Image 1 (cartoon, rainbow, N blue to C red):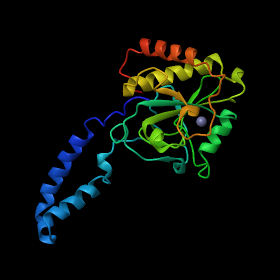
Image 2 (image 1 turned 30 degrees about the vertical axis):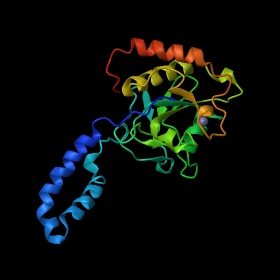
Image 3 (image 1 turned 90 degrees about the vertical axis):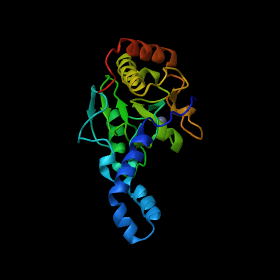
Length: 230
Ligand SMILES: [Zn+2]
């Protein structure tokens, strides 16, 4: 596993904002009591001010080829990646069921888990959680915070479910994610759920053709000449 990326630029910008804010309210703080204490409190509160976070639009996707269907907000945690948590990994999953049933359980607040994307057998891609946010897909807090999770319709013991269309669509999606966060296209950074420490999951299973998948990701990455933005 690779080095975790340090958040880029975020700390510096935010510190500057806290400084400016603290200066503005300095007079009031001094009147209340210890200016230093009040400033520390202010710094903590500042993190909760919504304007610090990136703007979001309802229904917006991170991948231009995806359709948006919102997961239940019980199955993910709001974050501001990659500024609060660096993203250096893609985790490959298999749904152990149909595409429709995966969408349904990710919408169920009682499920407690969901991935950012689901790729259907025909290559259709649905996004259910923004890449900004931490999806509960890997069963490991650190891995959830640093990765993007992609589900694939099918069963681990039925490699015939993994169609050419699915491999190609998923590889294009992963290539775009790797471009966006500067993630190396290799097996240390593109891993299966089975490889996450502490997991009892076996997906994507021995039928998943890793060599073929990485070849397709590299090919898509190579022909990807734009900036990687959706
Ligand atoms: Zn999984």
